[in-house]
Amino acid sequence: MRFRLIVAGIVLLTAVSPVLAQDGLKIFISADMEGVVGAVTGDQLGPSGFEYQRFRAFMTEEVNTAIAAAFEAGATEILVADAHGNGENLLIEKLPDNVAVVRSWPRPLSMMEGIDASFDGAIFLGYHTSTTNTRGVRAHTLSSARLTAVRLNGIEMAEAGINAAIAGHFGVPILMVSGDDAIVDETRALLGDVEGAVVKWALGFHSARTLTPEAAYDVIREKVKAALERIQDFKPYRLDGPIQLEVSFKNYRPVEVLAYLPIIERIDAHTIRFVGQDMVEVSKFLSFILNYSPDLAP
Image (cartoon, rainbow, N blue to C red; front, side, top):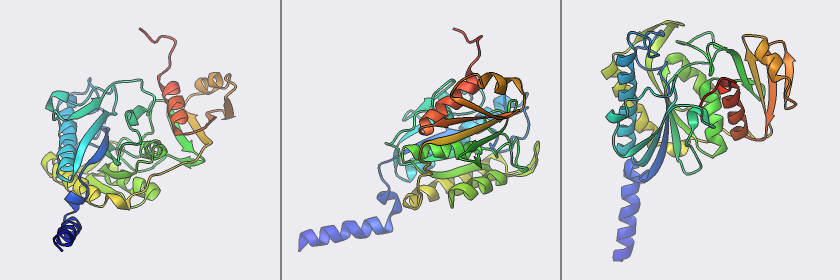
């Protein structure tokens, strides 16, 4: 009888405590910057911008907020990928000692480097809409300077979609996205009812109505906890191979030269097609075309 009472007590405690029920979770965080609270132009987004140092601190605090909320909700291991610009934005001395960070480029899985099948879920922070979206602050996909579209199996993708498919290759679902209202809408249209932390509302490519940093941290904290408490609701976004990748460039010459490769089909003046066996292969190809230059050194 005592054994039955103990078992019944454990079941009851688990049912009323979602935090206890999710104890031991391993979480991956991919952190971009265009979707960080208040960020609207290049002035905040790169080392030459006069507000960059302030905004990398805001980015770091958004990540710290998500980390703390995830640990409170039952996570026991977290890996963070610095996924913006030069990959050296986060102030790593400000992060807690019990996380690890992926920095700089190139890396085979790009913004998702470090993810594998051992993770229970992934979180996107500071994300932005795709280059084909008419809405969203700093809308682009992978390269605002070079690309005009990226498609997987004919579907136009934001970075959130590409990265969700990489996570899905390993069976890892996306739990939450933060950024402007447009990226939350775009991500949900593709992935379903993920938690969305709206920290600003897009008015144009370089304008937004925004929360203050402290208010944004409150929203991110709330949404991370909500996501982990219903983690069983989320399913991986899987694309079965072979996977067709189409990339459209702003300029002619990259397409012309890439078409010299037998693995590449030139679809039109600006677009190539590559067929990968899985998302890891697709990700490596994307990393190649965005990073390779004969001048690479050392």
